[in-house]
Image 1 (cartoon, one colour):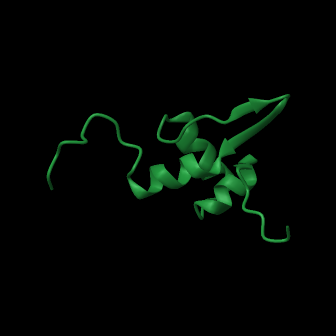
Image 2 (cartoon, rainbow, N blue to C red):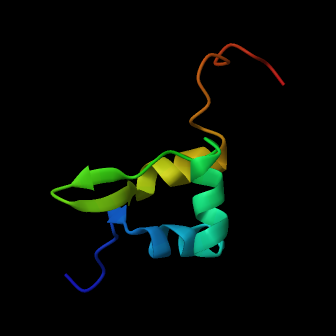
Image 3 (cartoon, rainbow, N blue to C red):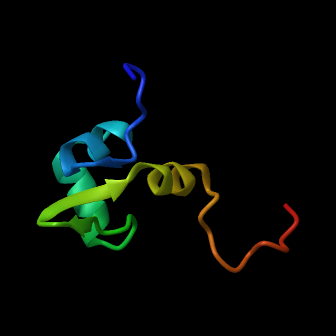
Length: 68
């Protein structure tokens, strides 16, 4: 179990995953460019897979039929 991949990340680690400073990450979240974290029993965490889909452009809704 040494190679577990995180499912959720705190703000600092979520920022690191995107190669951002925490303040830059917070700016993007506050601006609506990234999703807000989820409250998990008083701890705010970001879904790592959701962040990956956003960065890859796979989380865009409504343009599934567009051919580039």
